[in-house]
Image 1 (spheres, chains in turn brown, blue):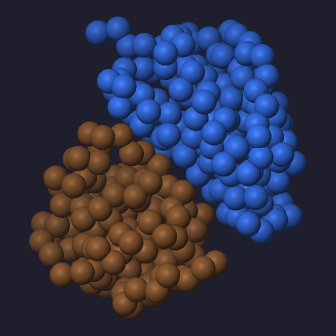
Image 2 (cartoon, rainbow over the protein chains, first blue to last red):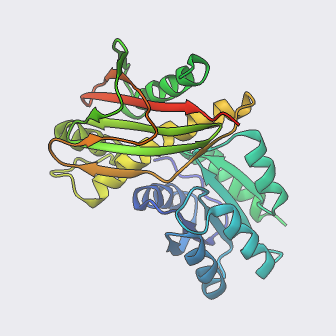
Image 3 (cartoon, rainbow over the protein chains, first blue to last red):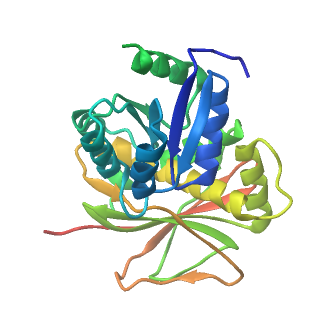
Length: 127
Length: 156
């Protein structure tokens, strides 16, 4: 896999699917990311954000219990500077708009490709 | 059931299977079944709500399930273990999500539930929604799938 390094960053991956988390982690490893932690639900994501303080959170949307958009709002309430990128198979316009209004820094559609993800990470991490 | 929302669901299933297997997918003739439907050995189910009520099921035999999960994982599985089943739930999730995104951008309002997966012999699905099931065979490099669509528009 071609590497596309950006500056080192710590990230939290949130998805109820272990396969989806592993797939994203493989891609992020090639672009300079260090895994801070994984969460399998929105509530787990909020708790782990508070304890791990990652540079970026990659958040799925459709999850049992607390969904991704609700977890996003809770994290932003906790930390207005939080950098959350939504990662979902759903990408209809009103959903993307809603996520960005709620404070997501970006939105990427699954399956995730290296080059677009690298570009998104660079733009989100750049002050 | 209406073709204007059924067809994007079928197209999405075909395109996702083609993408994941990196090979063409052959679509068979559609058949309409009654309220209950018998299933192959592995069935991934996604519920749909909003403008519709019902479910979409992608089903396959165990050999196809193991082969498909291996392709997605980029490493073969020997059995249908927990991670292999997770791959298949993600397959169903991506298929349904792509269809819902296309439909919602056209003005529909569809919502998805997280996927469930069932395995076993002689599975049959029955609902009190009195829905017919449209069964679409799909032939792929990994094996044969059936896409079962049981939906009805909500009348407000």
